[in-house]
Image (cartoon, rainbow, N blue to C red):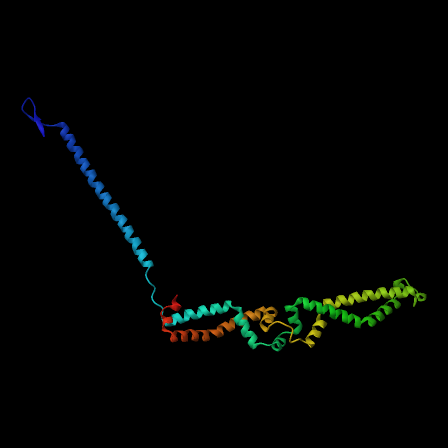
Length: 256
């Protein structure tokens, strides 16, 4: 729009021109805003779609296991339970093992020493006391000979022989020899072990499995591992028979 001046010429209205320019800019800004808003909505939708796909993928059902896979998984599960169950292996050992077999594989003295140290030490003390009592006469004779053959070393003379000073020296030497013998028998238990092994006690107490576990824990663990391997075929056949007897087992029980 415009107006005519005094000379009759047409002139545009200045304010309208400026207003037109402002409106044109506002229109452009409004258009850009709409584009930006649409782009943001598109990005938001893409992100939403991506999250939904991920969620659906995580919910996808795994392929159903084959019968052989079900049997294999259940067999391994039961073998793991056997591995954790010492009672089952102990029962097996006690059925097939015997004390006589233990005595063939391990000495009786070794078994007692490993399974009941208090009993072993108590028996050793009794054995030592018995031995030194039996050797008492020999020890006294040894003490007397030692003093008599070395009178000067004990501050004695020939005149002291068979007198109190001599007997006092003999008694003192006997006590020394006695203590030395007791210490020797405690330090070296081979003679006591031999005495135990000559008369083992089949009714010593404790089961075959409990004794083997203490006497030779390595043999116990290795034997258990071999036993588990040997049970594999039996357990697998057991699972297969259960499935064949009840079709419902195949349909889901072992897949849980």
